[in-house]
Length: 165
Image (cartoon, rainbow, N blue to C red; front, side, top):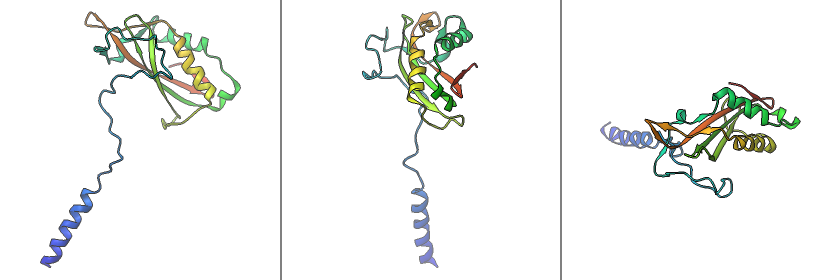
């Protein structure tokens, strides 16, 4: 019986310690800066102070507020029949520099259950191109100091239509 205990205990220990899943994704508290990507970023977009970029999305504002943003986005959006097949969300992160210019757009597309998905390429291009055309962004001012900053938007699409928040 003593020999069985000596064999079973190390065996159980090895099995339990191997239960760690090395493929589990780790999410950081701060996702960090978005590096320049020549294939999708405008080379003219620059941070005013890249060593001091604010990661407080609530401080990046749109002139006239969320309703004005939605009005501007919807008025520029050109829906096409093939977009009607898509319902889901665009989660878009981008930066606004101290000159109120937007850049470094990155996005994910998810279905209504928030699982990664795809949509018609034309719809993806339309949403991102339309967002990039909006020019009423205001850089963050925090504790009386001007900053470059990051923000993100969640755009809900139902049957190809942009849904207001």
